[in-house]
Length: 103
Image (cartoon, rainbow, N blue to C red; front, side, top):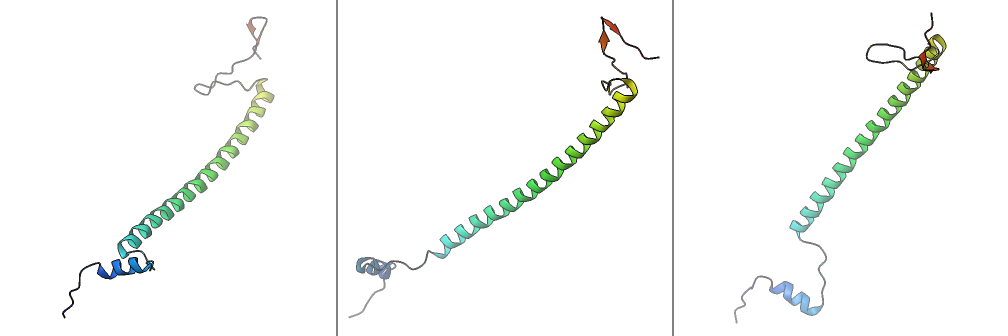
């Protein structure tokens, strides 16, 4: 008697016998590998961005320290650090409604 192979018959027989598959399909493996690879690449990119952000925040802190020192110089020299940064005009504090001008 001749036997005819039917696609998936072996799989069906294994299912009937209670044999569980040992591996996922190559297509499924490829999909999951590609997805995990994408996640890993994005996590590396996020890490790089966070590192740049950290450096930028340190730079901002250093500049803010320099601004504070410069404000101290203005306070010492002019009695105020309220300066119009567009044109350099010193905004002296008002006393009794009049501007206190230093000569």
